[in-house]
Image (tube, rainbow, N blue to C red; front, top):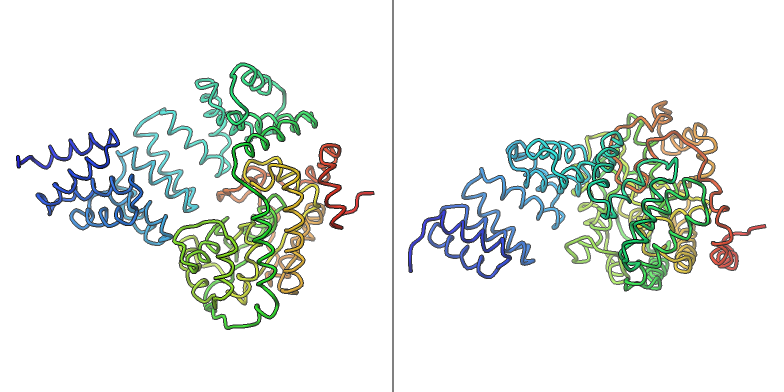
Length: 524
């Protein structure tokens, strides 16, 4: 066999990787590891091949070997950090990022990968640092600027995001996501952008499934301009376009809710022992349907000097999945619920605290605001006997419209599915209040925005916290918010959204009739 230098092997392997010839690159990596067993490069190449072939555990082993051979390999470290997050090893990922971020000064690729990992971990300020450094390495690169703009929005830096999106729209007028992201930055003041997007729809000849971003952007700006029925029609087109390609049935989600109600009785809650350690900070879980005010309450409470926020995490459902033998975050289904209901939940609590720890600085209370934790509220109550549990409620039709017009919630793409899901959630919510009783603190969105100071004082009192004036100025809180409300939380409390559904009363009539028949609301 002809002997080649390590450099020659590396060049050839990287060429094969560029061609996505994974089998060929794997063969070269194996030869490199045999002939140059003390060198990191062969193991790094092996890690890249394994990662791109979907063999994540093997990829981790390869990158770990590369770091053992050469601890200066920042490329292997950042690749490994990304893989650790996929295995919910968040503390290990943070350790690598802490040790290597300063060594990425001239590597835009790995600065961008580090930013991706920081974003996934909810550390948006650190993602911002990495992205700005990448922009210094490769100034005015459009892909980097787009990432910067996305991060800027999460941090409330509209002054940065707006000119970037204007530039990108001018340069790439047919890239629809830029129009969508730009539409969300602020209230539309005229229909100039609306006309531009309508013209695109008329000229692009694309099927509805390819125009979803434009539909949502048009709906949003037309709503800003109070062209209500036209706005609704575009929201409806967006939902229909998504569902036309989606393999989704709301019945499965409703069945999961029904399984939770059946399994998580008061007897189940009181049976078994839970020993979440008392020395930990007191968790405050904020739940409720999306778009019901969960982010508002999180920002108010996180402005208190004794409270910090872990933001919107998936850590509790991830801990439930891990307990059920599922290594990665996935949707909670009937099988997972059944397994979790038979657990003592001690290991779930421990896993959760281990995962969330890197986001906390040691204050007395910490918030986890993941709205869909309403599905697991009994498990949370059982795992953390001293946790504070806040349940948001909003007028049903305002809540339904607010979900319908978003691009995030699969059960809300059609009014029919949304009506059924809302009714199932309503039944679950009543179940939790019956089972958990005084452990639940109910907050009405309408009451809160109508009298924010009185409501804030009452909520703090129920949590056992003294009043802090900073809670009334939550809109000055500079921390990131990675939710659909990321821009609204920069505003003072307002009542503009109360009763907004009435502008769409004709369009929403089928949903109204369904909820009336279920006894959930009465419209006189």
